[in-house]
Image (cartoon, rainbow, N blue to C red; front, side, top):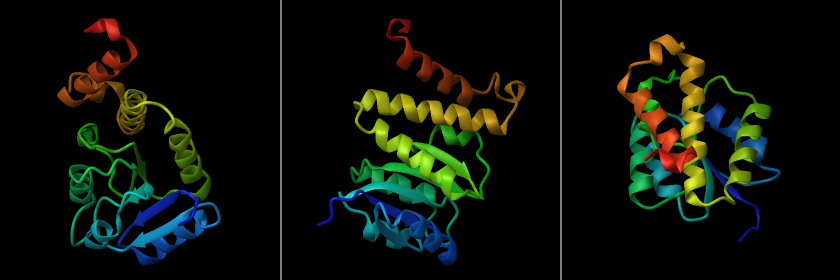
Length: 168
């Protein structure tokens, strides 16, 4: 058993999955799954961070995410995908959402930030995930496009509840 944190890279593009794994191999135990089924067979309680592709041919990243959360896995999940985020990102139980192409410094920064924040209690973790979703949407859409949408309003309300406990 290693004392290094563990990253599970899940992407059906073999070369890309192997590349991501190679970036983190010096500092992390790295596991690679090339499809959703393999990801579900590979994940265990030792996985600290999962890099998860959203669009895969056998089982989608969304479904993998739902199944691992239903099984009680609480690792940090970063959706790394070519699928531009839509308002549905609000409903995804991910800690961050990154659109390909990504580079090593970008992914390293995201993982380091999440792992630093992992020392916080679960309420703080939820705040981080909500903030990351807000940032992702605001990078993808204009404020005018977001205002008035149910998903964005729910996200704003959830953030408000987390940052101002007296807002209930």
